[in-house]
Amino acid sequence: MKSGFATLVGRPNVGKSTLLNAILGEKISIVAASPQTTRTEIRGVLTRSDAQIVFVDTPGIHKPKTTMGERLNATAEAASSGVDVVCFILDATKPLGKGDRFVAGRLPKDAICVVNKVDVAERTQVLAQLTRAASLDFADYFPISARTGQGVDELVEAIVARLPEGPQYYPEEMVTDQPDEVWVAELVREQLLAVVREELPHSIACRVTEYEWPWIRVEIVVERDSQKGIVIGKGGQVLKQVGQAVRAQLREGAYIELVVKVDPDWQRQPKSLDRLGY
Image 1 (tube, rainbow, N blue to C red):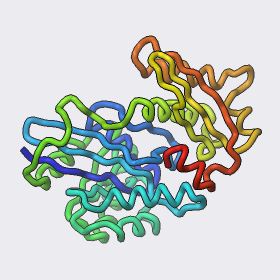
Image 2 (cartoon, rainbow, N blue to C red):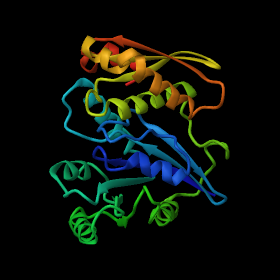
Image 3 (cartoon, rainbow, N blue to C red):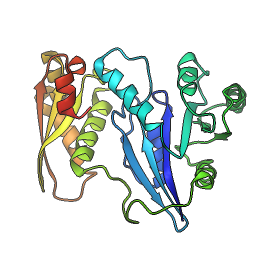
């Protein structure tokens, strides 16, 4: 039996969470078009007859503008040390920029470079990105599409080949160690991001304050009173839409109560970030 830990790291919006969900065949990490969708370290477990890989999905490393941004970067960088395999994810549709090189420079040279989104990139774009990525001097390079699954199995086999012999860390049926309360809060935030889109993606935080099945109370935190109106929507329509979408992803019978609160400038307040789990 081989076992170990593999971290997915890279800039925002390169497809780390989509890749993790594709590998596991199950959604355990929320996905949105907005940067900084992933805000905490999320573990997903792939168990096979010959191996168990504990994947770690991380926040996208970026130039921080707030205390929260600094904490997200620290979380991602910490998750890249002391693991068996590091996968550096690149977007095939975008040039290799300074930010990508900054992240790459902080990773071990035995990392695997994964060029994602080959399904939407032109063939010339993929070849050009692989050529540019070669200058980073990593151990292996894999072009994949996390959305369609192209190349994902080959990537997993390469990760397994690098793992040491070891014990099974998690029970066979466990796919993530993420608590139900955290998952529900993340689902609410995902649906809010889908509805409000670019209006206030970074200003929204969610946490479950009561969980007594089937009753779940979720607190939605924004930074200004004007944002509270956007989240609630005319006649409460936004909250209603979000609640319905979240219930559809939970087992039958769930009752979701959504409450919106204003915590001024919470992204820059250490106490607020601690309370929200960032």
